[in-house]
Length: 392
Ligand code: SIN
Ligand code: CO
Image (tube, rainbow, N blue to C red; front, top):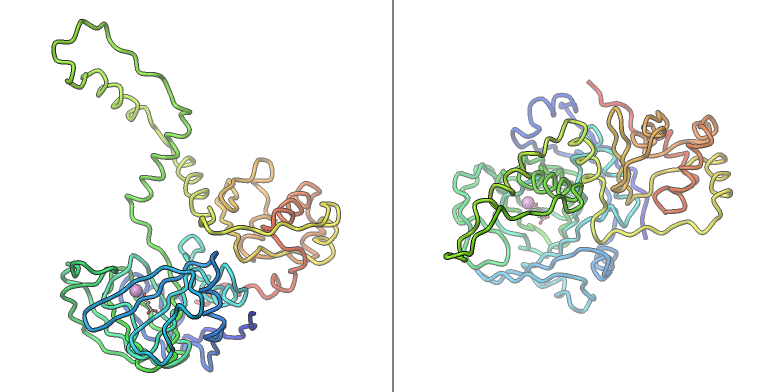
């Protein structure tokens, strides 16, 4: 169902380095014809077919005057309104998990660390459709894939939300700019920037390439959860010498002290945080599953040596100086120091020559990952097509 994308991001007068210095996380940037002649990766009917799949996260948002209705997928085609009916939009999340060409598009954005990348969301809207004025906790590139969309954007001075709406809509949003995007145009917005995109034509498809800015509270929750798990329950609370209780409902101060002491004993070091983030950021989303290879591991080893291998589009791989993480697991020593695995993570593929120079343990690990469906044998072409380093 996928078409190969040949789209290449054009920066015009800007460069990646200038963009990162002057705009990234600072202010919006409109790149006219960032992808000249851009062709949508999926037709409307292919996108609607994705929204009918129960493994795909999708939402339908319809507006009638000031009334908004939100429904969650999957949606059979007949559950979607007619394409002629105005003011509705279908949002399909995580398209890169299902369509190889989407992964190719995302590779154009690898001048930003993979750890920040969330997903590619595609929206289809009939004329007048949109999600209303809002802000996101994401850096986002909004690429117009078909039709025209009018974006009204501006800083948010008042984050009050409209009460009683099924989606978060700003009550008092005063846009400062009004832009109409044509196919191939792309608008970058930093997190928290207000935006309201309305389809100015029918058949309006917008691709949101989102880079999640995780809030500290979320990371803290993960840190505390992982630390608690590592305690394996920990010591049991013991009562101090007790006397018969005249006030049995009173919370014992000793219990409060016990909880405080448990917390005070936690002393995570930098390596611990590195490990925690590596596992957390590579853990697949709950709806992701892999199709393991049927072949025997000896055949998979041979296939990797003969034609290289590439990361499955659903795989997430990150590394640090001391660890390698893939799909929520850390590679054990001594392979955690493997340069080859780091090359795999950066290039998202290894060619046959690279695999042939690998150690038997490395090749065995690659074959194990092929068996799990985390890697596909035979992806050497991708390695050689890996992104060039960002221009200065
Ligand atoms: C859309 O594509 O309609 C919404 C994208 C966004 O506002 O983040
Ligand atoms: Co948004």
